[in-house]
Image (cartoon, rainbow, N blue to C red; front, side, top):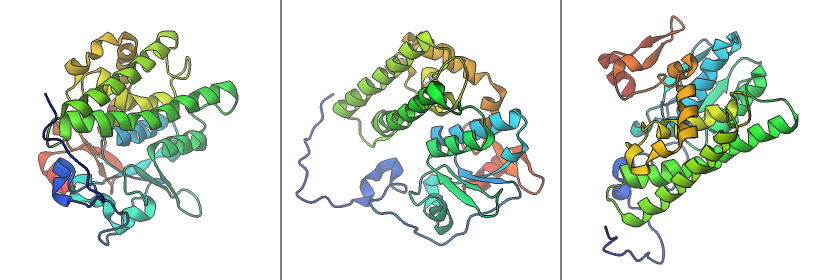
Length: 292
């Protein structure tokens, strides 16, 4: 496959809103709100505004893991932010996350609400708030934070790079697909080498780094991301596969990846029944309503 015709960048870039393909409603070169709409607020201490993407799954898995450990303060209301419809550009969402990206969390357990945005920051905040999944000090904490921030810095090459050009771009071009496939496989090799010597990313214990990395690399290794398992030959990363399957089997992980999910079998999606304070399985009607 050749990249033709060639593209010569103009002297000054201008925004062509029609060139965004599948993401024309999501991406724009300016920040801020496009419309006034307050965010809903439920009765639980934590208010999560998100979607069941890999970055969103990180936080719902963390919350479900905390609940599984008996932390009642981790009870949360999960509110769907449909990024395809531009919900992330509402005035209410921008107040919680000026970067207009999911996930965003509002902690209302104290005298003043605390906003936290960026998935890595949310995971750290929750880990420190509840004293779980992150060592408090010393070399173990340094190792956990190193792998957490490795994931935060590396995954954009997988999602915005490989995933975009391989699965979502309006046209397929050899150069960007090759470039990001190479980097994605390099990252899988980094993980495979690490997991050959360690049960989990930061050591013998499951922790915040695993919760952050699994929705990206675990799903990729299981062939569930971008339908790219064969293309990337993920089966060759045996240690990543072992790690991915072990985490996938955790009940909190299975539950966390269902929250705010709007694709696939409705039986595999969870919606919040806010008046009762519990989740319910989505029906097709509720799925359609939630996506509006």
